[in-house]
Amino acid sequence: MRVLMIAPTSFFSDYGGHIRILEEMRALGELGVDVAVVTYYMGKDVPGLDIRRTAPLPWHTDYEVGSSRHKIAFDAYLTIRSFKEVLRFRPHIIHGHMHEGALIGGVLARLMGIPLVFDYQGSLTAEMVDHHFLNPRGAFYPWAYRVESFITRRLPHAILTSSGQAMALLRDQFKVSPARLHALPDCADASHFDPARFRHFAAADHPLRAIYNIPADATIVGYLGLLTDYQGIPHLIESAVELRRRGENVHFLVMGYPNVEHYQAIARLRGVDDVVTFTGRVPFSDAPYYLSACDIAVAPKMSTSEGSGKLLNYMAMALPIVAYDTAVNREYLGELGVYALPGDVGAFTAAIDELVHNPPRRIELGLQLRKRVMELFSWHAAAERVLSIYQNLDKQHE
Picture 1 (cartoon, rainbow, N blue to C red):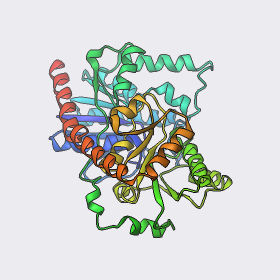
Picture 2 (cartoon, helix red, strand yellow; picture 1 turned 180 degrees about the horizontal axis):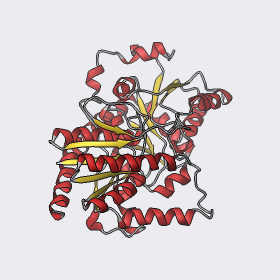
Picture 3 (spheres, rainbow, N blue to C red; picture 1 turned 45 degrees about the vertical axis):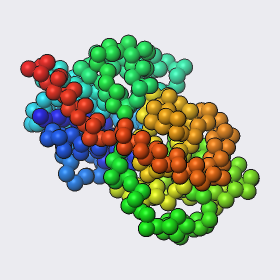
Picture 4 (cartoon, one colour; picture 1 turned 180 degrees about the vertical axis):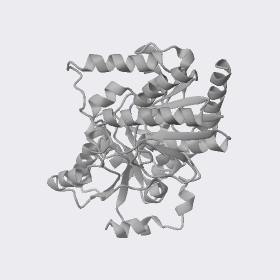
């Protein structure tokens, strides 16, 4: 079976939805599916993956993540390249990631008479609002919402949702038929994210402590992901301010990009730049090593529909997790998360402080979370479900 994925992003980059695309391609490939992905011209090549890129825009060669008016031109180029690849590759299934991928893929699927699978990772209009690209009370919001509704209701033959909350949103708000909805939560590679690979490092002697000048006796609170207000990075800085005020020996290791200099400046202004270290971009291959230096992991994102795949990598690394109490986070963590009310920085800080003073609980939660991820969030099992959906759709269109 041949599957053409359409990814309106600079695949591969070391964050968020890119990890889902990467792991889906790898796991489906192991099941014998011939998968190619069409994507923007930037991004890293990954050995073993068939990545087909657009031509570069002549006037914008440094595209970064997030919503941008330049995405219209990027997606025009992506449409052209996708059409060429459909004719060349002759896929049995088109698999569109995000709404632009579903829109482009939906048009091509109709032209070619083949099914479209939409990999849904959250509401388009909600994301645009979160990134301050769209005003929810502005004149353009109703039009954006109509476009999102058209994409989700009219184009896909099946929709894979990254969370049960996203499935409920599509069913209840966008009135998508439940028969077309399939929950496919993000998963983790527990062999790659395995703390046993780093057991030769004593906690106080991890090399990253020396590299980043972190005291041997400090509790390391780790975050790995995009650095944006939307992801809650200002909340982490405020937690560092409060924990310092309390006299706690805590160091925040904030791993990711973009906006590193921006948040470093805020940490300096708040007087915590010596206890908050920003590493910059961490390659996905190195993520387990960086996480192995941490004692506690944090997830201050508050989205009610998007997945939060970073939680699964934290879980696989047997890290206890402090997170805001959202339906999406509970879907991954169950009763094993240490929760705070969404947006309540004081409660979030208190939850971190609680774990700082309870190492045995940290260890026990971490072990249970790793067990949970291995039992419930396996990419191999997820790929088998996706392949079954592909096969059923292909039979219906024969």
